[in-house]
Each structure stands twice: as structure tokens, then as C-alpha cells.
Length: 210
Image (cartoon, rainbow, N blue to C red; front, side):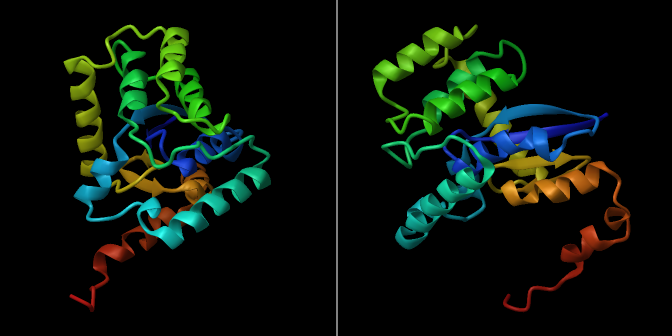
């Protein structure tokens, strides 16, 4: 059985779509998934990238595109009334629900639906309070242990070579984005392409702009 680490930040619409698509995309394969919350903003800063919402024209396109993708996937999805937003309360709540380790799929699903179904402000205090009451976290979301775990998760993702979410890591290989799911499936199926040197081509390609 292959182990997949799914690095996720609930702020990402593509992470939401990938979460919904993953079971069908990998149907029939033997695998297990660890859902590991990370802070996307910190990953972008470390990788010297900007999020699509930080470029006005790209922001508008991204929102239209993800809503179309949701429609195409048959996923009930609405943009939250505030986006981007501070994802820390949700990330910390997810980790607080996992007394030791990572949140399970049920917890991640509840948090994603909190953001991406009702079209409301994810950080509305009353909504956060109700969500917390429903999930009944084992730890204090604002506690030092939870904060340290989120930092450690983000550092781990960066060290693995991830630069955004959703990212999936299998056997040291990083697959990024919703559209990487067919490639991820091929890897899990043992497609010989992965052992024919193609994966390593970028490492040997010289950047002519440097």
C-alpha cells in the first residue's frame, strides 16, 4: 500500500477540488492518505511566489475557473464572501482535532465545506464558534503545541520540495495541483515512465536566463 501525504490549506479552492476528486481519481488503487495542514502564505513567501489572488486579473480568472471546474466535477461550491482570508484559525482548528498526528478526512471535509459551500465569511466569529463546537477539538486551537505543529508541517512540506497546495508526496516525489491527479495515479500504478529518467530531466536542464 502506497502512502500519500496531502499538504492542504483550506484557503485554496484547488485544494478543495482536489480533496473532492481524490477518491474517484485513485479508485481501485491500494493507498492511504495523510492530510497535513500547512500555511500556504508562508510557503509562497519562502518560494518567492505570489498567490493568484494577489494579481487582480489572475484573481478574477482563478475564481471563474475554479467555479467552472466545480461545475464540471459536479461539486457544490461557492466562493466565500471574503477571499483571500486569514486561514490560521481553520488550520489550527484542524490540528487541534488531532491530538497526536494529523486530522482525518472527516475533519478536513468539515473545514473545507465551512469555506466553500455556503458563500459566507469563513472567519465570521459565530460560524467559527459553531464549527468548533461541532468538531470538539481535543487541544486548544491557539495553544503552543498546535502552532508549533503547523510551523513544522509547513517546514516539512518545503523541505520535501512542495511550493503550493494541493501537493501530494509519494516516495519522495511531489505532485502539485488538481491537474496532477492523473499523473499521481500513473505513479501509483507503476507506470514505467517514472523509472525511465523522465522525472529527473528538470534537474539536468540548465536555466538559460540566469
